[in-house]
Length: 148
Image (tube, rainbow, N blue to C red; front, side, top):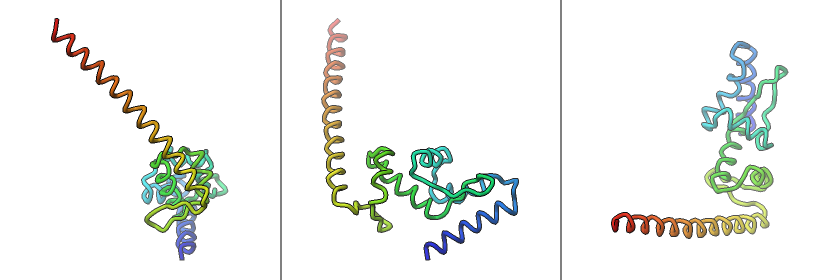
């Protein structure tokens, strides 16, 4: 059923292009933009990084489907979790999506995610130390200025 909807959306976008050539690439981009809120520059960046692969018309316009909108949603979830685009590209095929959550479908990904979480925990600890040092400097500065 999802493939029928995707095919229908692709057909609708192609028909829209054929019937209104003056509309340009926005005819193909608009459905994805409405469904995912991804800015065109973001979608093009995802494409450059190999995360998104829309089909092209003979004129070179991108054809986005519902599957592309879903892929953008998954990419955003993984990026929000602190992963970079290179890592997302590698692990995305191994992620399982139940419509509400993404979960690693390969056992080795759990270890990789735990490693990434530890790296983030270490950064948080370092930032806490930096903040404490800065707070000390601010306090010393305030004490020195009130004592003058």
